[in-house]
Amino acid sequence: MNSPLTPAEHTLLWNDFRNGSQAAFSQLYELFSADLYRYGYNLIRNRQLVEDGLHELFLHLHEKRHRLGPTDNIRFYLYRALRRRLLDTVTRLNKLDSDDYLFNQAEFLIKPYEQTLVEEQLIEQQKLLVIAQLNKLPKRQKEILYLIYMKGLTYQQAAEIMEITIKSVYNTVNVALTTLRAHVRTSFDQGGALWSLTIGLLIYFTKILLG
Amino acid sequence: MPNPAFTVEDFCKDPTFIRWVLTPTDESNRFWQTFMADHPHKVPDIQLAIEYIKTIQFSETDPSPADLAQLKQRIWNDIENPVHPPYRRTEFRPDSPVRKTAWYQRPYWVAAAAIVLILSLGIGWWAYNSTTGLTYQTAYGKIQEIKLADGSLVTLNANSSLKVADNMGDRAIREVWLRGEAYFDIAKRKGSKFIVHTPEAQVEVLGTEFNVNTRREQTNVVLHEGKVQLSTENQSSLVMKPGDMAIVSPKNQQIQLKRVQPELYDAWKKSYLILDGKSLPEIIASLEDTFGVTIKLADGKLAEKTLTGKLRTEVAEDCIDNLAIILDAEVIKTGDTYLFE
Image 1 (cartoon, helix red, strand yellow):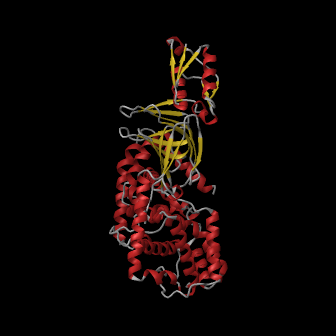
Image 2 (cartoon, one colour; image 1 turned 180 degrees about the vertical axis):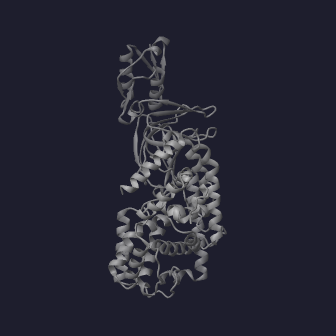
Image 3 (cartoon, helix red, strand yellow; image 1 turned 120 degrees about the horizontal axis):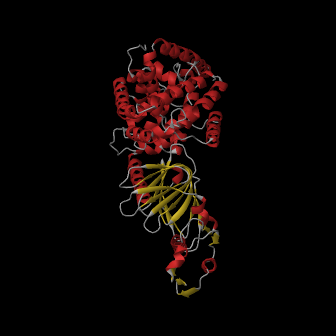
C-alpha cells in the first residue's frame, strides 16, 4: 500500500520524467494514480470530480515537466498538487459556503484493521470504542492522521500539503495519541493481553524477515 | 533520535518509528531489533506503540482498474491531440480549460449557476431524507429481487417496502429503509458503509449477507456471513457473527442474541418455508405476513405439534391446504380467514 520506492528511486524516476521520458511518465501514472485517487476520493467523495482532477493534474504535469522542481517523495509532491487542484474545484462549487474546512464532503473513516496478531475476543468491543472516539475527531485532524500514520509522510510534508503550520500537525498528533492512551491502555493491559502481544510481535517480525 | 527514555507516545511521534511500522525495510528492522535487544524494558512500550499506529488506519475506496485505464486513455489522447491552448500559469493551480473560464467569469453566469446548484443540492438532500428516494413495494405473495446501483442485491419478501437513497453508487454511506422483510447481499465497497434502517434499529454492514425482518413490531436480524453491527436508540452497538439471530424487542429496544441455522430463516427467497425447529404460531405468523390472511386454530392442542419438512409458499391456497394436511386438520375458509380444526 505504501510506495515501495526508496527516496533515491523517487528522485531517479522524477528526474527521468522531467527530462522528457515518456516511459517514466507512464510509470508515474501506474504507480501513483490509484493512490492519488484514494486520497482524492476521501477528500471530495465524488468519483467524477476526482477523475477530472487527476485528468487535469497529469496533463498539467506532462505539459510543464521541464519546469517542475525536484523531489525525493513523489507521493508528497503529487498529493500536494492534487489537493490544491481539488480545493480549487470545491471552492468554485461552494462559493456561498462559509465553512473554513472547504472539503465539507470529506470522510476519513478509521477502519477496524484485521486483527490477526492479537486475540480477537479481547479487542473486538474495545477496539470499536477507540475507533469511534478517533472518528469523532474533526475531519481536518483526521486528514492529518491519514497523511502521517497511513501514508507515512513527515510532519513537514503533511503541513505543506494541508497548508497549515507544523505546530497544528504536532497538536493533532498529540490529541490522537491522548485519545488512544485513554481508551486503549486499560483494555490492552487487561489479563494476558501482553502475552498475546508478545506472540503477535514475534509473528510480525517473522513475517517481515520472511519478506 | 529514539532513546531509552522514550514513552509509548514518543515512539508514536518518532518519524523513523512510524516509517518502520508502515514500511519496514531490512535496515530499519535491524535498527529496531538492536534497539530492543539493548533496551529490553522498552519492548512492551514499543509493542503498544505499534498497536497504536496500526489502529490509526483509514478506509479507502479503490478506483476500478477499468476506470483508471479509461482515464489514462483520456489523458494520453489529450496529450497527443492537444485541444486546449497552453496553460498560462506555472504553479500548481488548476487551470480551467478555456471554455470553462469563458462562461464562469461572466458575472450573470455566476449568479445563474449558483441558483441551479442550490436547487439541485436542495432536491438531492430532500430526496435523500424524505420520500423521493426510490421506493420498492411488494404485494402479498410476491417476492422481488432488486439490484441496487452499488451492486448490492436485495430480495424483498411479500408485503414489504424498501426505500433506497439516491445515487447509491456514489455515496460514502449507503442507506436504505426497510419495512417488512428482506435478504441483503451487500456489495463490498472499501470505505463505504451500508446501513439498513428499521423502525426499531439500524443495521450497519461491515461486509456481506444477512436477513432482516421488521414484521410484528420487532426487528429480527439473521446473519448469514460476514459481520454486521446492530444498534438501537437504547442500546449501543453490538457486533453480530454469522449464525447469530438478533431480536430487537419493540418496547425497550433491547437486543437479544441467539444462535440459529441461518438457512431456516431465508428459505422464503426460494418460496418455501422450513418448518423444523419452529413453533406452529411462528409458522402461522410468517404465513399471515406473506399472504395477508388470518389463520386461526380452533384447538389449542394443535399449537403444540412439532413439524418438520418444508412447505412451498408460491400459492396461498395450496400452501395452507398442505399445512392442514401435515397437521391432520380441516380448513374452513371465510373471506381472508382460515380456521383450522
